[in-house]
Image (cartoon, rainbow, N blue to C red; front, side, top):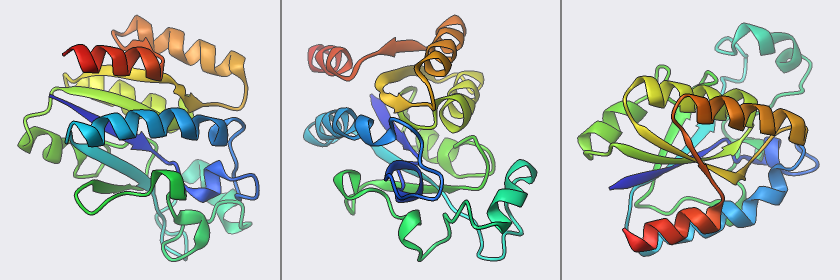
Length: 189
């Protein structure tokens, strides 16, 4: 049984007025929604992974401290930018996991929850591909999960960056499929 992992699809990253909008993130919402609907129809586990920092920034990772202090990164609980975009809003039976670092696995309950649910396969999508998605995929592989990257459900600042990261992920055993191909395989399983 697979689980869906949706990473950082919050207003600050996705919407054009977001404090750290990722080019192309908004364009991935329909593909992610297709996969999300497919998981919902099959009652499969869904995890929304979100980035969240304390208002004073004491828990921000060092490469982002300066930008955070200048107000360029406002994923703080209670702020509009911290919300998951409305098209992908979690339902009550879906899991929301908060992370403070790039990887969805580092110092979070994600691995524990997946193991308690006996999950060994993950479909991963979200933003940003070369940072949070990539770190999460690499950690998932290191933890022995079988990972499929929903290629058209991820975004990066440029297509060249996205292509290089998909190449690297494929070379460590990650399957890279578009949403339609993944859903077709899911339907046949």
